[in-house]
Each structure stands twice: as structure tokens, then as C-alpha cells.
Image (cartoon, rainbow, N blue to C red; front, side):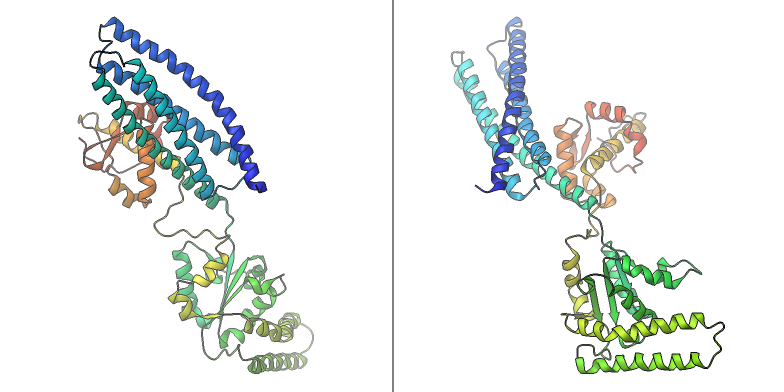
Length: 450
């Protein structure tokens, strides 16, 4: 047994001890409640009746649900405390443990009930009732466990996404290629990824040089490489700043956007090395013709060009060794190569997804219904929640919405209405009033009521 499995085994053993203690408390409460129920039927001379059986079954199933929730809660909490990452295998093991618990408790309840009424008049019909009711409840309870585990999984994933630091990505390009930069930028915006660009991140009359210096603070750089880019002082200054960082090449995404930038042919690198050597000489010669006074800014520019002409050969050699993609190739695959590489640390939300925790969404549903309920009291109508309409309006996953509504129904806050709608119960109104949910959410009513 490896260390992880051994640790998991120890966690489940600890969970079993806590669960056993909680189960004993639930069983004690059950015994008292069952006695109270039977006493009522004795007093009304209806002891030997189906209604008595139904009440006892209802109470037993209620306690089995509590037992199952305790088992699930202890397992999930102890794994979280032990800081073991939740995986599909762990969720499957927990599901198996809780489902087995339900099956054992259902069989125990069946035997107790069958023994309880085996000598009753017309006992055969009662036995059939007991078996049918418990079989139905067993299926529902096991299904609810699967749903509860799925909710926990989705909430955990949302929590992980919320806590992940989004990498900062710098878009480096020549302004002669602004139209292409806009295309690239538009795609990443559609994926909720904000690229750093001078056109929006440099306030009016602010320093462009200071902005270019921030390239070193970014995790990744997308470079739109063209002939104009490789001959631009600003662009190549950004490049020189970035290549001073550790492992810069593994954080660089060059995109070739024209055929003139022949950077993959090592023999043709000389074209750009020569260009910057000539520019450095010409700029230096021009400065020499001037008096020294007032030429400090020009010397700073010359220093930039000197760094470019000294480093461009190494930069081109590194880029030529990478497996790069053209703009057309990336666009045809929705930039898969780039997104895959940064995907371990980047949260990419599709348009249909929404960053909202389940509990907040559930409270929003209840809050809206309660607000409509108060507003509809004078008209004497009971408002309903049109699930399909709100999924579209709130841009929420239909799977998540339906799971949370089922959970609210099990909690007793909602109940099914006509046409697949839901409405508030008395418990739901009490909960909304206590939490003042009608004050927190301003929702447009979507149901006319029953």
C-alpha cells in the first residue's frame, strides 16, 4: 500500500469513529420519536393501520438520511483537513461508502418494520407497503448522495479557480501591425483573458518607456513578429528587457505574421543584425556631429540601440529553435498551443460559465421568489421560478442551476410547481425573512404564479 492510500485509510478510520458516535446519537433520537408516534396511534385506536406504518417509515427514512449525510460530511471534511486533493477516485470511494451505509440502514429498517407488524391483521399488505416504500426511498437516497458529491466537486472546482492566480500576459507588437494585434486581443478577451497593451494600459501623456519596462513583470509575452517588429526600436527594446529574465524563452509565444520575417533561416539572421549595426553606427555618427550639451536623451536612445544590436542575434537564434505557429494556424485551432501551455495556471472561463458559488446562487433563487411573494400578496398569487428563463437571463450552467434547485427542495425551501417551475415553501419564506434575502437581490419576475 503506497503512502497516499495508507493516509486515506487512516482518514477513513478516523471518519468512522466520528460517524459511529454521531450515528448513536441519531438512533437514540429515533427510538424516542418512534415511541411517541406509536403512542399517538394507540390513543386514537388506529394502531393497526397503514397510516401508522407510513409515519414510522417516514421517521426511519428521515434518520437514515441524517446518518448518510453524517457519513458523507465526515469523509469530506477529514480529507479536506488532511489536505489531500479531491480526485475522481476519492469521490467514487466516498460514494461507495455512503451508498453502502444507506443500503445497510434500509435493510435494518426493513427487518425492524417487518418484525414489528408481522402478526398484525392483514399483515401481508403491510409487508408489501414496507418493501415498496423502502425500496423507493433507497433509490432516492443513493441518487441524492451522488448529487451531493457532484455539488461538492463543482464547488471545489469553483474554489480552486477562484484562488488561482491568473498569469499576466504582455502583447508586444509593432503599431504597423495594430489591426492584427486587435484580432489577437479580441480572441483572448472572449476567453476572459486580459492582455497588457499600450493602447489601454498607458494613460494619456504617460511614459511609454515605463510601460515597456513592465514586460519583465509579466509571466508570458505574446510577440507578433514581422519585419516591422524586428526593425522597431520600441518593440526590440521590449524584447531585450524580457530576455534578461530567467527562462524567458519558455515564457515567450512568438507568432509569425508576415513572410518577410525570415527568422527560421539562420543564414538570414544577418539581415537584422546588419540592420541594427548600421542603425547604431549612423545614430552614433549623427550624435558626434552635435555639441555634447543637450544630447543626454540621444545617448540613452543610442544605448538602447546598442543593446538591441548586441542581443538580437541570440534572440533570433533562440526563436528559430522553437516550434512556432503562424497566425492562421493559431486562429484555426483557437490558439490551442498557447492556451494549453499556460492552462495549468490560467483560469479560462467560457462565455456560458459564471464565477458564482452554489450557495450564493441558491440564496439568489430563494431571495427572488420571496421578493415576488411579498409583492404578489395583494393580488393573491403565488409566484413561480421559471428555471429555463433564468438560466438564460443569468447565464448560468443549466446543470448547476438544476442541482442547486434539487438541493433547495431537499432542504425544504422550495417545491415543484407546474410546468417544471418551482415555488417557495413556508420554510423557504422563513429562511428568506431571516437572511433578509429580498433586500439582497433585485430580480425581474419571470413567473405569473399558480
